[in-house]
Image (tube, rainbow, N blue to C red):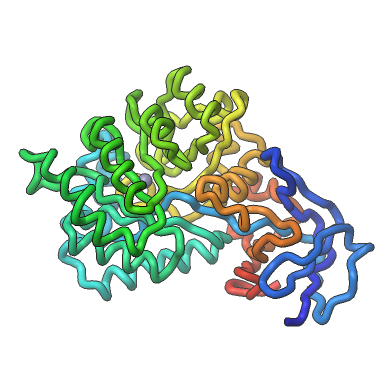
Length: 390
Ligand SMILES: [Zn+2]
């Protein structure tokens, strides 16, 4: 396979090393071979290659890793958003609106919506993304949700425990048995992950633990939605079961932060949700300054965060959560990779997948400095140009 040299890179973000710090090379070059990064270093020292791409003084970053997205659903909820902006508050029950629309949608409708969103993600620089079920909540609808998700990503999450469906409102235990029994058996072949929404109005700590451990027994790895709408036991449950990531983390106690740092579990922050619900943002500084590994993700979903844009989340993280530009970029790339336990992505050093973003800008800082501006000039996935042009 021919080698391609990208040269005259003003700033090459590499995230090299295991310490969890942003790293970059100025006046850099990179060689792609067989879908992987074969070499990185100073442009002046670059070895010869079969093809040369001159990026003319712009920045190259690892493709974004969006470790939290809900992309299989029917319908939309713009009226609910508009009403909320006019003063009504968000509650977990709003999910049921989307459950109804998803159950009545055809496979073709769900697939069309999913593929449109996957294209949106890619065109904004995301090269790895997680995708959850959770709007079906029946065996048939959860199974087709994970099967559809598996068509667009290898990071599929079974989220049968998103919310209790209305037909089980009087029999929550019966629904938990379904989620950890027959629905799990139907979904596990398509999924890598199992997730639970542990929150008042969704699932309690004992239910969450029973569901996650059943998923682990079926070969899935655990992640969790927790502490989004208020303080609660979710983070502790996630730590007890060895979850890869606990997501939202908007309301944390000191012992929650300790549980995150002592287990090495990733804290995934989803500022698009706080933006779209007018909730306070999570305290990213407290987590980072305590030594936590922080990831940033979109939480793309039709109810509480209908953005597919990692650049938007980076801008929010910097402006609203006081992350440095370097921390935000690291969390949106290497942090997401850790949340998905994917050592092959989120970095650009020899051996990593050649998943790259070329910005129409000389520095990563432009993603927060020029918010809302389409700065992604080109995207490579496994060394193949999949969006834009260099
Ligand atoms: Zn979510």
